Length: 92
Image 1 (cartoon, one colour):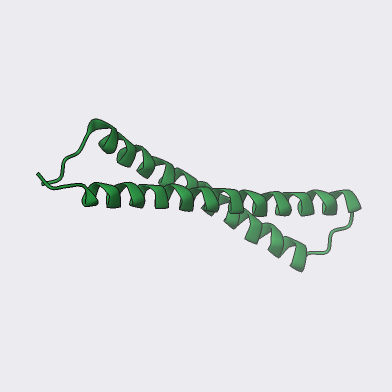
Image 2 (cartoon, rainbow, N blue to C red):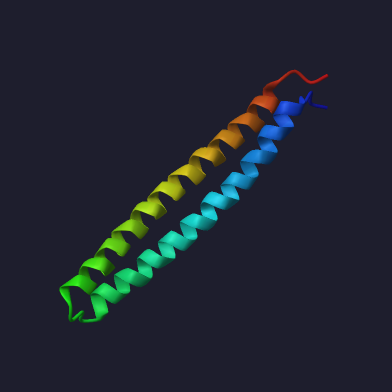
């Protein structure tokens, strides 16, 4: 058996929620990036103002996907490290 403290259990449980949240937002941002990129590549835009808005939204979606993807990976690795630390602790 492993010795667990309340903070260990809370840390593992809280990390799982954030991983799911960050990866959900990553999926939303990446999906919108792909959709808006498809619009830019396949549809002629008449107005320069509309074109600028679509480009800005595409770039913002890419930035959001990168941020949420990186945050999800950081939280996931932190969670795995915490579990590895618990497994390394002496068994009582």
